[in-house]
Amino acid sequence: MPTERDRLIKPMTDADRALRKQWLEDQKLSPREPVDVPEWTRKNIFRRVYHGFFDGCCNIFKPILGPARTKTLRFYFPKVFVSYLVVCTLWYQAKYSPRVR
Picture 1 (cartoon, rainbow, N blue to C red):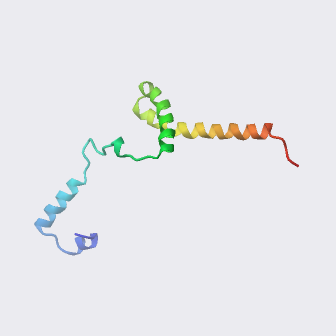
Picture 2 (tube, helix red, strand yellow; picture 1 turned 135 degrees about the horizontal axis):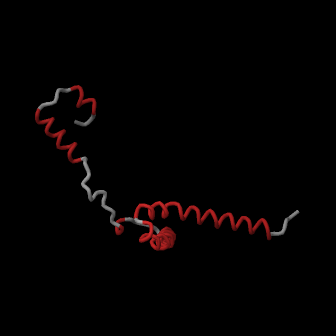
Picture 3 (spheres, rainbow, N blue to C red; picture 1 turned 30 degrees about the horizontal axis):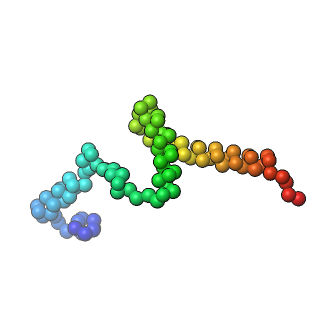
């Protein structure tokens, strides 16, 4: 049935019910899904370098923290690190650059 309206207006036959039941069963994911295939993930060279550095840093902590907390660390660590570098750069520029009047 192309739309929900068609499904609700027309009475469903036994064949339609069987097809609908099969369709609903097909929507359930197996325990191994979604499958993550790194070779299919396309990234440009800058993202690969950026991700490689932070993945390497976070993989050091994987045996200690476990996979769930390492994923959280991998999410927040680049943001905190880059923010820290920006703050340090701005502080350096404000402190050591001569004022122009």
